[in-house]
Image (tube, protein in one colour):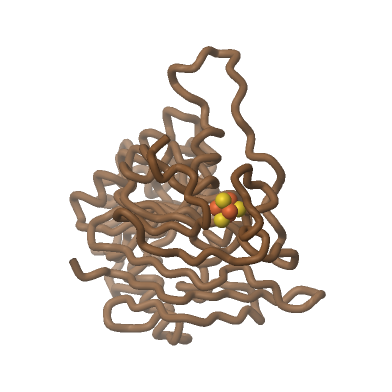
Length: 324
Ligand code: SF4
């Protein structure tokens, strides 16, 4: 299958008072049509920065290297109007907190129609009709009257649905959802995931789902990449990766999740230590200071990400190779 988005060697460096910090360090991945690609890892692993780089949304002074092929164009080479046309029309973005992406002083209708009039050149009436259709698609009750309401009049889950409607307004082929359910309670979270899954099937939409929570991936992602300290440490098909994690970090992320069959007082297994800051990346495997399986070579040589048994893995030891 031809990939919709193919990213190679993506590297992002951000300016800091102490020089440049490399926050994404040579990442490759691809997103296939109508599939959900999950990106997981702790805060600061480079998940969000690697996506913002594609849309030209990095802070001033950021340096980006690599290639991101999308629809015959390299997103990393686009500038100005050309980039805005692609990022506003062909790629939609949904953020964690819809209150930061929705304008509090504008009605939902204004926000939806403004986007479509600018990018699709629709007239007022056509944009209004399309806005009602979009709100209906994301299951906002009474979509026509919702057009006249303001964001604060909706619950968190409804606001996130509206943010998704805005992201879908111009019929994008790719939707990037950055922690779209983190601020929501479990029931609302499940509803948003079902919505994304349905939109993907009904509209042939590809979705990049960024989350720190592997449980969120388990219901929806087709393939998953695990990010750690700006690198991919393991990637593969969801079932394989969640059922038989091979990288010690993937295993630790899964062990840190509450188990549905565990007794109420069973403590969660926290991951020892904290991820390194981009200015203090340890030599060798970046995970070695936290890894219970580290051996001497791990402290000196950075393991490459290599194909193994239908997945890609970066680990010298591969302690779960036999599925234990
Ligand atoms: Fe642990 Fe070594 Fe594998 Fe890194 S390379 S994850 S330190 S065992």
